[in-house]
Image 1 (tube, rainbow over the protein chains, first blue to last red):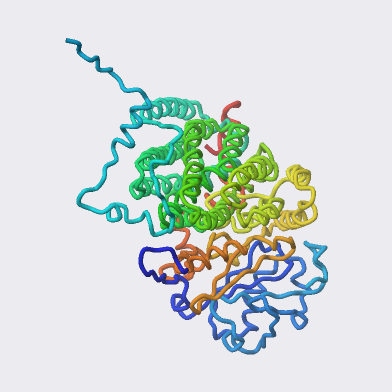
Image 2 (cartoon, rainbow over the protein chains, first blue to last red):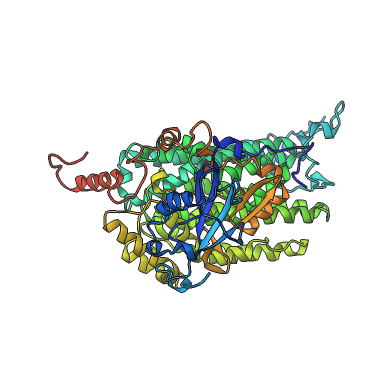
Length: 122
Length: 512
């Protein structure tokens, strides 16, 4: 059942992409790096390249983690909707298949300063 | 001729019978279905409303008498508190953050409960039920009022209290409590009773009120202790009503059991998520701690909850589906919440802070398996950043759960190093969740939850379109006064100054 109601009832989603003035929401998180209390919500144009997302908002947001400066972005593993996935940094978010409210995650295998036990895990 | 003596007064039992059964009548020109249109659509079958037993059998005149007496006592203490600068008796102004969260998120919940009980009192066909709901509706609005009055005295001196009504409607973290009550109020009358009357009032209320009121007493807050006492006898009645209601549903028809179980699962989890903030209050926000969240959970969750589940097992009800995962979260949640509140404190109408070394030692002792291992390194790092003059502010807004609306601060039940990611697609839209249990609730009634007003995505839509300054004005948040780190806040400065002035002469140039 989709809802308990006395008559047919259809809800209208509040966060459809049409409401975001040409931009969209992308959720980003760095696995095993929990200084950041929750995945980031980033509002960005779908025409932006993946590299722009990476070097712009993501780079700025993760600075506070002591491991941020040591990231080798060419070695990072990515997940989209919790499945392994390989982005092309030169292409746009939409060309990379990143839709509205997609969650992308990345993993780094090096030392983990704030969660030492998670070092090297992925 | 003998004249039969007419007794002057009715006995309590007779009075109650006249007031309840005696006032109910059979409709003559309307069907019962037309009179009570909401009684059937949830699928709950009731064969005999007269089997409803209200163990209190309270009549209206007795009710008014008791409540009036409590009101007199309450306002006498509140007046004394205001006249004697009672606000200076609290342990430390950090304590006020707990009060601010309570006023912004929980007191409006009392008002919502008032509206809900007024509504279901009309929707239930049974007269005994109607009377009990009517009294609870009046109790709840009284609780909202006494809480607002008790805390209004603090508003004369401290920041963050002034816009609680706007905060209730607009600020991001209150949407957690608000969505809980909105969810209950947009459900049918029986589900409402499970949500508020049973899960909230019976299963979870001890976890809210007992630590909160003892916390107030431990920290010298006479105003809050007084509204706690004033509400206490009502709460006993509410708990009894909640328990009576669930047993009534279960006894009336075996077909009710699976429906009740589904609501039990749902509302336990929703309540657990809302009350999660209490864990932070107990472990971090009370300058003088009563007990840890873990200890409170052992007493009020495991022991009391366990006894209740054993009692309900004879009806075929099993412990709520989220029970086991709740148990796994206990040693983590207060730390996860407080770390979040600290890094987002630029957007909260209360203060957060980094716990002192001494407080962290207490946390390590209370959480021997988790604090040192997982959480202390993060606090140490935050302290280092603050000491270097670059305190960490997380300007990446948070991903919120579509169901409970909390920022997804939670980790996998069996892996405290990994955020819990849950998502699904419904009618070509993606939705995210904090846990399997919130996802399950969404799946059951997707058309309801797709409409969730999630404050973070809303910030980027019209009319705010991402303007944080406009957002602050709209939610009533005064930057630099209401928000941010407690260290260096006007609340901290003023409290220390006033307390010093109470024992020493005022010096020129000092803050007033």
